[in-house]
Length: 426
Image 1: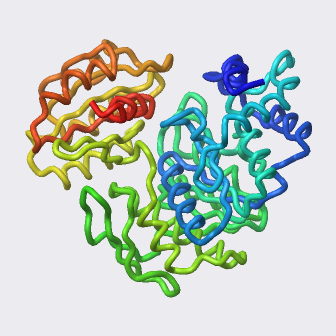
Image 2: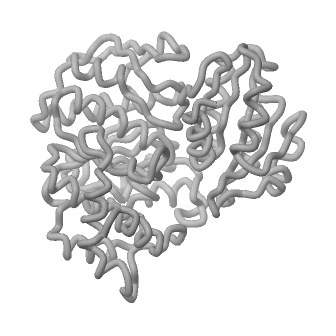
């Protein structure tokens, strides 16, 4: 089996369907010799920020000479970018070999695994074969019944809890917090960021039920003292850590993610990993994560930001207002998936933008332009619709002046298509 055949096989598995439970994942792990037991992990859940936390930890650990496996989703630059070892995507040949080994359990089973479940097991198998020192594992959806909730963590991280994926996780903060807090493990620290009282009470109850150790990070003294187009600088007031850090990930929301990362670093140090301050500084300065306030071009400025829920859109609006004071120089290209709160996202972004260009990605989950126009009707002074992301960029970008800033937001599928457009150096 070559990589093309492996991809074709994976595409035959359920991709859009969410199938609760871990039985299919455990069946694959049984057949693979339980590779998830071969390495310690940091398990990261949350509505927003998971990928950024993983990216920062990955950069710091690699700067310290630690062999790191990274599992994230969805893909953004390439299908293979979900699985990386020491920063390099898993080679096509290893994708093909791994899927070939699992093939008998993927096709023809009475209850076939989802594509995500198969890829998660492939990642764990690769991490075992490459003898990683630590795996950084991002939850796909929720946490309690997610295929990743089989790893053996040194630390669990819950970034935040807000309304998203309500059809699957529930339509209240409490129900979503219960799903995400399900990653808690006996005797293991569960770090968590800013939570509502309802969410925090659920987290503490879950920790008490399973014997986990709740670790709030809200009191971690951290102040952003500079924010620009290239990096942000933070002042840190914490014994044993650098007093000042330059972060390659932009966006005001990264402050909360950085708090979680630094506290996780302290726990990893306690577990025996050598993570000197110079590695922390170098790693965070070099950290990058596609599609999260990613500056794709300067003069005119182009920002790619997933912002696929209301909380993310609100934070994006705040950052754009801070970086681009002149409202007339702000331009928005928006595309949303059909299961998202399109009106809420639009309302949040309308605080920073007068006009919006609407589009739909090629994803089968994309909300049509007409439906999106109806959802945001009356929120912006003017809206324009385009048949595709590429068609929109072909028209919008050449008309921008050097002082303008274009923000592409609303869905990582839209951002991924926009990234490819800019990578072609148009």
